[in-house]
Every structure is written in C-alpha cells, then in structure tokens.
Image (cartoon, rainbow, N blue to C red; front, side, top):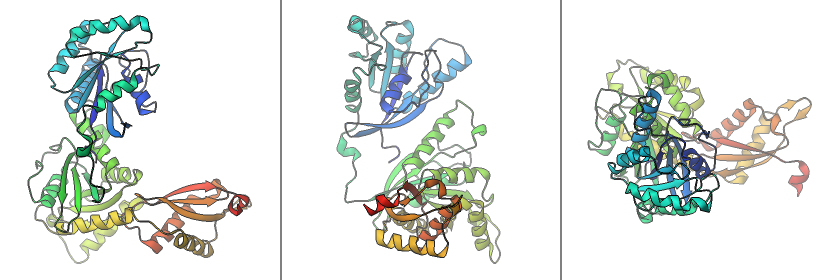
Length: 449
C-alpha cells in the first residue's frame, strides 16, 4: 500500500551526518555524502525495513534557520515540507560541534509540528564525547540518543525507537485470506482522475476542480465493490513535465508521491484526455508504469465531449495503442467520469488485468510453447554461434517473470526476445501486464546434471 508505509524525515543543520545515516540504513549510496554543507538540496526517498516494519525514509537538505541565501532558503522549505508529511522526525545534531543556536532554532520549528521527534546526537565516535550528550537536554526534546552513523554505532537502538512510534502492527497488516488490489489512478493534471475516483466510490472522496494541481497528495481509499473484491484506490497528483514544475514547489513533492504510488500499486489506471489524445507526457507516464512492471488499463476519459462518427472508437483505440506501442498489451476503455458512461466496466478490467499480472504458468506448458516457438522461428546465430534455449520456468509473478536457461546471454537478440514474448501472450494471454525475462547461462553439462 503506497501511503500505508510510515514516513520518517531526517532533518537538522547542514553537515551533521544525515545523508550518511540515510545511506547506511537504506543499504545503498543514494544520497551524496560530502563534508560540505548543503550537498543534499532535495528530499531523497528510500524504502527500508526494521524488525518486520516497512517504512520510507526522507533525507533532507540542511536547515539554516537564519540564512537569506536563496538556495539555503529553498532547502529549508524542502525540509519543512518533509516534516509536515512525516509520521516520525529524526532531528540530527553534531556531537563534535556541540549544541548550537541553530540547533535551538530547529528545535523550536520541530515543536510546532506536534509530531514524534527523536533527538539524535551523531558523530559520537568515541567514549570521550559521551558527556556532550547532556548539553542537548537543554533543547527540551526528551532524551538524546547518541550514535555514530559513519561507524554504525547505536543505529539499532535508534531504529527500535523509530518503529516504536508507528501504529500497532495489526493495523498495518491485511487479512491474508483477502486479496486487496492496489489500484493507482495516474495521469497528467486535469484529465479527470479525482472525478473517476469519486465516481468509482460513489462519493465525493477527493476535491475536483478544473485547476491543474488540485490534488496535492496521493490519497488512499479502501473500498469493497459490489462484486466483493476489495481495492485500495490511490488518487494521485497529476504528473507534469519536469520543466513545468517549479524546482522547490509543493507540486514537486506531490509528483514524487505519485511516482511512489505507481511503484507500490498492482494495477495502474492511466487516464488520457479524449480531446487531446496521447501526448508525450502520457507516453512518459505509461513508460514509468511499464518500467515498474505494473499491470495497466488505459482509460480514455471525457469520451462524451468528443464528436463521433462510425468507427471513431475503434480508430481511436488503434491510435492509442500505436502511440503507446511499448504497452500494446494493455486494454483500452472509453469512459466519461462526468456522466458515468462505461465506468461500470472499470473494475472488471482491473480484475482481469490483476488476474493476468499474478498468473502462474506450469513449467511443462511453458516449455512446450518455447519448443514450438523455436521450431517455428530458429533462434539467431551470431558469429557462428547459435542461441540455445534449454528450458524455461516462471520464477515469479506480479509481473510474470520467466527465467530462460540459455547457452550465452549475448546471443539473445532483442527482436527474438520480443518474439518469444508474443508467443507467450498468444498461448497464455497476459493481457494488461508486462512480461519480464531473466536470462541465465548454462552449458549442456550443467543441464545434464
């Protein structure tokens, strides 16, 4: 569930080790770490887990409360936005520098958030600095926690404290016997996403306006349809082109939340304005959905506003699939969220896409199809070497992912892989979902063993 994960904001003055901590916990060098104040200018996000609790960390630029510098002011604004959205805030300070007047200013900002705040004293690299902890009690934010992010000292205790402020585990868990389809409604601004969500839910759940950007956050609503299937519907902010977004605006944060919603959904409803057709930005958003390996239904909204003649719908469908040729497996549905035209067909399309997205294929049937495909079109030969596909197996679902055991990965030409994908789709369907391949090299001796 996209927004069910608690958000943990890491804030503090510049150069107190926030990004070092972020990188250690995320397990990746995501944030740039330099001993120069102001290196992290934007919020950076990473999903992580501790003691079975999943959450999202936000690394922020350093807060310089009194600076009039434009860049530092923007960084401060970014950190304030992160604090506003966070469930838990980790306030980082520097043991080597001791408590500073700027720390006191930041502490005052944090008190006004009325959020759980954990006071972290970083760079406590040796026992000689332990006495420094006591001066941080003056900030009035409770017991300071001493750590060394660089040396990974005290991180476990800090993570224990962070997750202790999350909702009880049972509130986050979904009944294992119930399948809840995570459904993200995505698209450019003002294509009718919120109108569609309200129509699906039968209530005014989200604000609707002709002004682009009305939806600022990814809004989750859990809903059980009349046929008994439960969905978590995520109405996301419109995704505009990068150059159309002010660098440090609230909208930038909203777009990041929308991208996170795509990442965590099962099925994406990609809304397109019938009056404008598929734009370059629609294609970019479709590409994001495909790259994240999510099932998709393309929704052409505002169909009632288009003048039609015989064949208009079918010709429009062909044009959509031509413009989104990398997603030609998706079904296209024509609706009007305003009037309710064909909206009743949305959930059946979502259910069908999810069924294919989570579909398993037997190994025997899969290898029969692979064998027939090679008989019909011989694998490519490069520099006298011929591609050999020994066997395949479906290694995972959501999306369907197939491991192909072959003699040499460099012999698998893209066009032949595309041909195999088409053969699998012809045999098994997989409408509405991407297919992925993992190529694994094996020689004949390995196969025999």
